[in-house]
Image 1: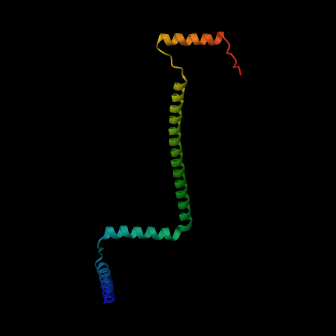
Image 2: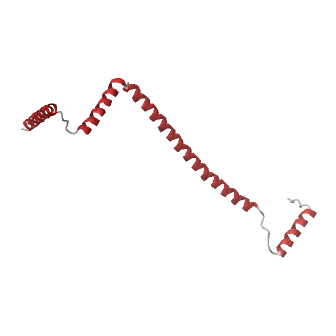
Length: 135
């Protein structure tokens, strides 16, 4: 039953098309002239492209261009990732260096008594040589 509906619909559309073309040719009038003209132009352009353009070469060139663009984007993103890791590592090294340098700097005591005792110990070490251990 479904086939009969499609066959009947096709016959009705064919009859309508024939009637419309006969009416337009006998009266010299075109229905929807601007829309039909733009549609005819689009069809002519498509037909010209199909007849004159080498689609295999066109597709190959477009794929080559697209792969070049994708490769460029991948390299750019990887370079940005490497630079961000480099910045993080540079900050870490700078932080560790400043931390170690501040730990190696001798802290001076603010008390005068402790400073005097340290100086006295240093002079004792320089004036008297270390005694060897006796076994």
